Length: 87
Image 1 (cartoon, rainbow, N blue to C red):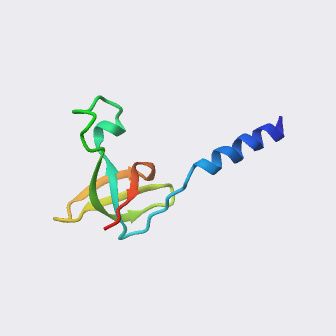
Image 2: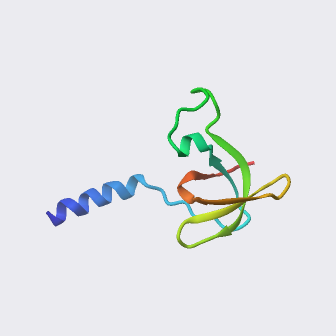
């Protein structure tokens, strides 16, 4: 049983990529209707919005974002809803 559980854990860990962001990184975040699993405007609507700058990074995996344009502070968001933004 232990060997089976370890094999399943190894297979899962191969597919999961942990993303760690630092303060000052540019990121994209998912739109609200994707995170809340409600039907969106259409299937062709964008699912990512941004870019945003990470203002604070916490060890528990959530981040505080600010917008690039006018430096407005957004609420905290879990890191699983973010992806890196490449210029």
